[in-house]
Image (cartoon, rainbow, N blue to C red; front, side):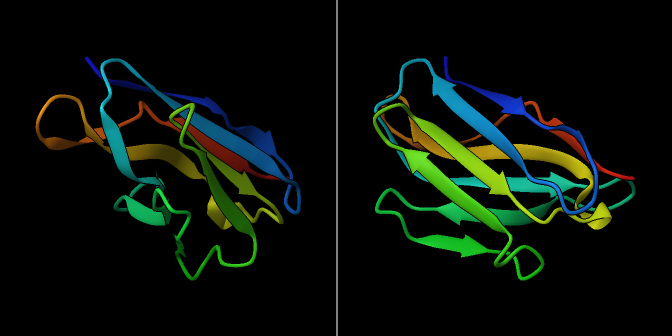
Length: 119
């Protein structure tokens, strides 16, 4: 069984930096796209950033230039470095991976980690 476990997150002041990480474990044959999504109270879950196995990245306009996504293919991990955080970045952050365990690729989600930006 495949599991995604997130770490990091917390409470920071505006302008600060924070990092969240996610590790996949279990019977994993391969992973394609890894990504981070977030959901603020009363809002729909939205894409933050994605990264392909080759390192091609994609970012939401709201985080471009402030957030950096990276991955370690050998360790099946994905990291999101968040700089110059704003109160509007407050949300539950979810990691997402498209993983092939046996024969087909499936979409997996982490449990979510809270990021709060407040003075």
